[in-house]
Every structure is written in structure tokens, then in C-alpha cells.
Length: 83
Image (cartoon, rainbow, N blue to C red; front, side):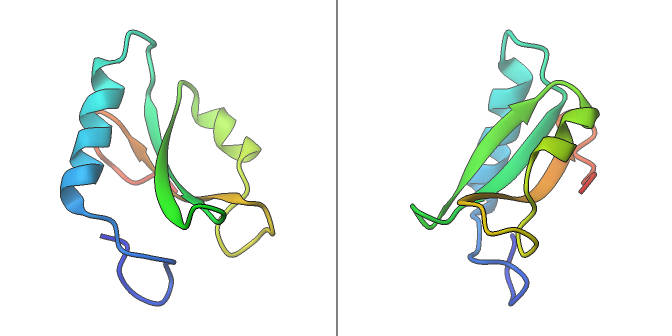
């Protein structure tokens, strides 16, 4: 997943599935999984948030010079991409 020139690197589907499962099993009532790109480590990292309104707090990949950038956001339960 995340293959092509629009993304910095590919992400293994099994890793993504693990991140979804981890978010669902958390004691904190997370609702969204954010797939972030870490420019320093050159890798994807998961970030979990409770409210969709929190998305505005994250710089997006290709739109900001930050070192951790939002590539995509998914609803943890429907697995629908929201960003």
C-alpha cells in the first residue's frame, strides 16, 4: 500500500492490519488511525486519535516541511479512508 510517486515509500499491508488491530484493542477509545511519515527515520509510524477534529493538528505530506507528516487517516472500525 502507498505505492507510487505520490508516496515516500510502500507500506506492507500486514503492518497496516496490525496497526488497525492495535488501535481497536487499545483501552483508550481511539477512533482513527493516522499513517504518518517520519522524515528523519524514513519510515511510516502509526498515530491514534479519538476525535476527527484532531486531524487539523497534523501537517500533511507534501504540504509542509515538518519531520512527521500525515499521509492518510482511517476510521478504525469501518477502515474507511478519511484523509
